[in-house]
Image (cartoon, rainbow, N blue to C red; front, side):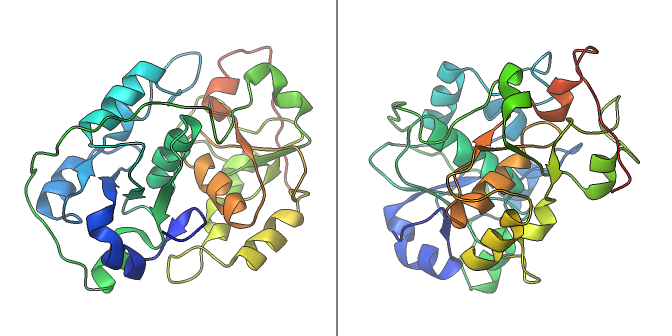
Length: 272
């Protein structure tokens, strides 16, 4: 497959027999993924549940802490993942949930993972076939390796040079908080909502456009950059976008929901 973290629907059509496909459809506060998968999915895809397979139990690490290594590996094997076979992940949420699967596979050393650019709508628009039901998937033999993307631990967050908050601007400013008990952001963070990563057609903007977007907040190649969101899911969308732009960023997986579990940690609100 081509280099880079994204794959077009046209390329997936050409390479479908050669890849493992993971369907990660998900909505915050909802659980329509399994039903949507059964109604129609990319042929041969395996469904991966974000809450069960891509996160650990909620707690001090936030609403979606990283899953235990062995649990994640077992989930990927159930989904048919092999380290020797490329993986394509998609959702119907503009790549937000798929980005989490992409990041975790890369974090556990998988060398070839792509996110379907434009998500499920792009597959349908390209004339891709649709399979229904929940067919069995042969188990994979995925073995974890050295991380290819990195985390930043909570104690190191204040020292990150450029800390990108991927949430909507009103949540960043602390004007509203629909999911967590405290509103605001980590002091010193800068806001790049995930919506800025996408063009009007739902696909990621070009590498040049994304590089300019992130350069405006100081996130450039070679800088110490990390991203966070509410619970460590949608922040991977910003990490993915920066990867497209050639910027390596770490993930603060605990994100805002983990930060505020300790009332001693400072909170900033702004009208900017």
